[in-house]
Length: 206
Length: 302
Image 1 (tube, helix red, strand yellow):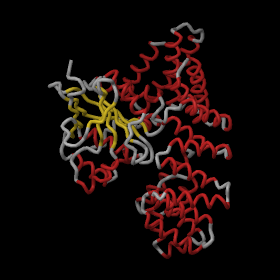
Image 2: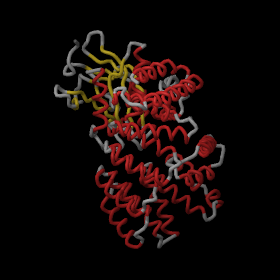
Image 3: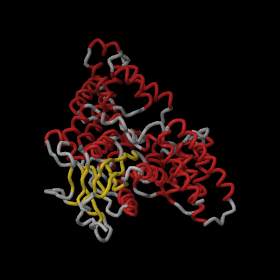
Image 4: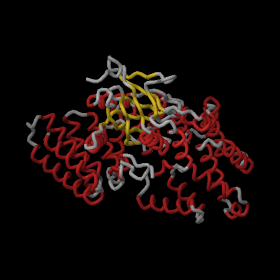
């Protein structure tokens, strides 16, 4: 068995990161969520988050849409050797830093299939400050489950447990924001409203 | 709620105006009519008209409506100086107006001056106790400050008086869902279905909430409402088709196959599954393999 969540590092790829933040920007007045896609590193000491799928921007607390989307997404990625390894959540209000019940429940559900799953919560203040701060760290907070299966915030200062894979990710993100790239993002809600819309967002980074 | 035709018309106009093809005023009128929230566009295009003296005078008396629309959009985009200027113009033109008073209170809200805004709204309500907009602002302020129980309380009080306000029922339902208070959310959708029984959106939302609540009775009712959604939408609603499949599978799991409705149930389910597969084959063929696998595993458990 690999190391417990107490030791694991979490590494977020640029593509996954940008997709999730752009999704939040596309729906500035609602809470949004998504799943993280990835694998355990060959050295067994990290969870590598290679991709992400934006899920919903309304009624996040309802089960049917979740029970439709997760199997479809898992099925697609398992063919590529990847799994759902975590959950992303952005709260409705910009000053809300609480990890709510809905987020925890979905996180717990994902942990049943991938015990080392993590939750990323959007940090709105950091996102807002990004233009001026030139900060290289991600505008998200990392939560993992402790031994009693409670979700705990992993402190971000000087954090070696959570990193962006590509150091220039924030620069790319800012560039995408300035060109309003969030407009093209398709989430699972959009797909269910019109199945010709692709939740893989294939053309996003061209 | 906006129809598909209206949405298409709006998007067409929007891209036309964005690409400097004219039609800004038409676009702004449509946004106002449909009560949509496109504040960055409204601010942008509205200001371009207001800052152009000849365009502005061409509007005639509608000029003031535009000032109001741009003021609200500016507040939504946190361009508070623009909002202040617009409100000043309106105040000069209409010195005793309560409508302008509402905008001034809204500006206090936008600044985060909650107590001052609350005072302003209270005094406006004294003169006009049945002003729906102001009552709703109270709910919005509670929500903005993170006081969700307060928002629920205000919204319930509001609905006691204005029980025909469908948007308010929907808002309340959504707040309940976000707090995982599904029984209360179900009640809201029941009210909506009672007053507007042919709107498929409410049947669908109600079914979703019942499914989330779980338990045999709720699952059976949810299935009925997914089916009625399919009826009302001519079988075109993907969520309802999926919903039927999920319900049938869940019901079988709960009753462990002892239910008599099983045969009937699986007929509806296989019909829904067929419709989904047909639709995916036509419009999303690259997603068909995953769909087939997922549906198979749902039918295997039923």
